[in-house]
Length: 132
Image (cartoon, rainbow, N blue to C red; front, top):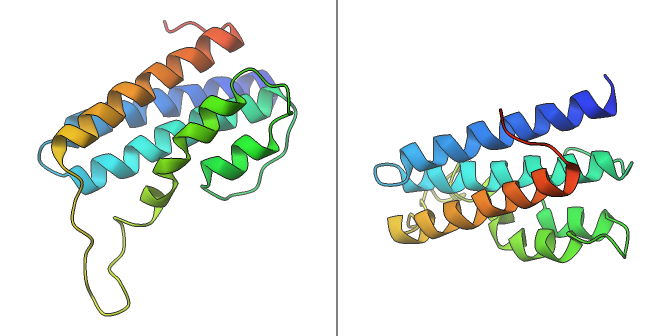
């Protein structure tokens, strides 16, 4: 698969996942938080792919930011989104003793959605990729 095709695929998934998070935010905030993280991750992976930086299957946005070149103009923005990294697993599994973490408040999820939508738009603009 070409790098451009992979970048486009990551951005399509980011758009779909942020849309899913918006649909789930009020009734299923745990799942919405997971999709916020996934959307941010996919947009970050688009940046990594465009920069020619290989990155394994991990979900940690802080590590993704660290993998970008030091002078990358969106590196700090990716690092700021590291606060979502835990949502990749936190809300999807019970603790070893069967406890579920408290779900995030819907207003927090909505703010995270808005911020992540802005991040996806920043990535698209940086990469010269417009939505159709």
